[in-house]
Image (cartoon, rainbow, N blue to C red; front, side):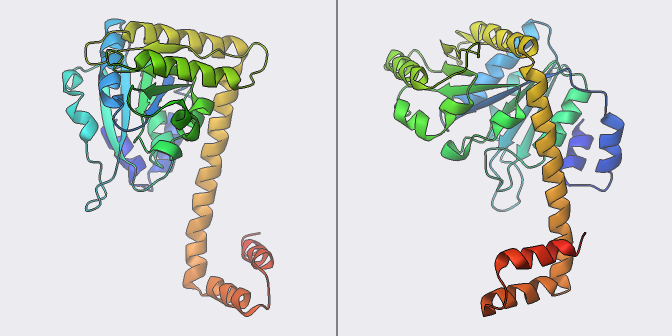
Length: 297
């Protein structure tokens, strides 16, 4: 798995053959996205969830997307420090991936890495995002269930609304619930969620409290995630989400390929010529874009 995910991260020429070989061997894993602002306890909560899942006999994969080192471009591996308890468990695979400047809290290689973990037989894949605040909504399109972590003292319900997390969460967890203010955060969050319009028969997001450091409330979180997965399957939403995910993945691969071709165009100066004509006023950006696209039609 480590070698395959390295091929994904390095955009290896072998990647096409790898993905062709993995086709049809996945689709069984429950992908859970874990998101929230920095400092709410994402890594500690992820470690506690892994421990509880292992007690239930589940094979677990963890994809921890770290900020990139400004020097090497690699992951800082901060999440690994908090997950040492599972380092020697053969049924747990933990991989840190560098975001490499990619916005939205995820690495650009994350979709293909998830395919590798799924094909390897993981029952549950936990995807922990960087914690980039108001940009961190991309996880909703990549996960089957999105778990949003909050904590007392990390801002009020208005901050949660500003960050966009009220729109993406399937499950809300107030971590560090032994601190003062946990009940207030819960009330504010419940009030904010009550204002949102939801279709008849849609999933009603639970708001749970945990103390990840001690494991308190973690079993309830797993039960709620299982309930959400059952709801997705029975309503047909699971299939719909996975189709949307595959569509976005295909689009991203196609756009990346086009950008590489545009790099070739740039080397042949056609793009520079078009840009100069736009600046000179002899053409407009839309007409120039049509000419660029016509090179590949």
